[in-house]
Image (cartoon, rainbow, N blue to C red; front, side, top):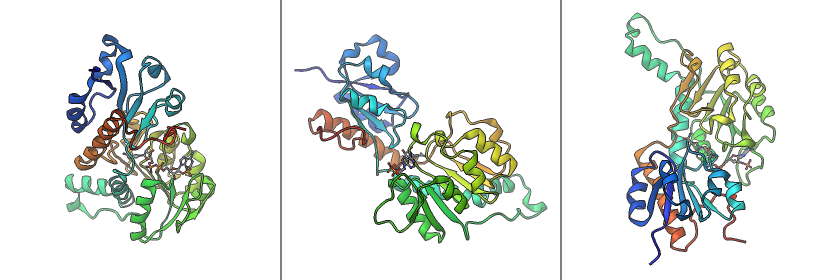
Length: 316
Ligand code: NDP
């Protein structure tokens, strides 16, 4: 009988659902133990967020066949390098769309209506001394979505119910969608007062939202970023919040997680979340199950279930 395939797990821990199911079928190797095992035995990688799966790591693993990423965003996996080596990359699309969209609406409302600050106000006993100040509103706003993919559309459906205007920017216009497509991000920022960012990370979107875009958004402007920290020029955003170039920001993601620039902490016009877009028990379990299902399907000879676009599948 052939030995159990080895799977390299890069993160400190994937979800419990993954670990329970990988153990019986694979020899599980932690990244820290790679030096003490035979890298030629590793046929799969299960990875998550923080750890980089780059060409150098792939070159150490000549038997590598598949990289299963926990999460829909796979900017920490060099998918082009994987494709060049015939290595399949999978991710976890669809199963988290509604969860992330819910969080986005919560963050947008929290930012515009200053909900975390209002909570702090009550806890500090300040209500007895006077009412909480009036805030900005979602009423009358027009949201410019930066990205209109799976999650973007789930956010748009919710924004429809809130009765706000909506346009979007992406490289290609989405067919059969009832919102105006704006090919130029700067032009969109000028035309709206609220940006919701939900594009992938990586070099193509790096610092798309820069000082110029923030200035175009204007003094009533609200920025919500639930995409990746790399998409926003963080020092430019900090300066814009300090100077009142824009009104407020809601951030679930940062350029160097988990390190959040401390200068944000003293600002009342920013709501800070620790990358919790999909972070519920239900949805993280579904994501973990999809990681496992992709690996099982691959080693059952049935191919990947949810390969990334860079992975040519079915093989040409
Ligand atoms: P999709 O691939 O379905 O959608 C991506 C959207 O971004 C598309 O509209 C795409 O359109 C657009 N886009 C991609 N590249 C560019 C570019 N260079 N310029 C302008 N627009 C671009 O992805 P999902 O909706 O499933 O997920 C989006 C991202 O959200 C993930 O990659 C991940 O980084 C992030 N995310 C964050 C979470 C959190 O916890 N905060 C949770 C889950 C995801 P087009 O290709 O036409 O340009």
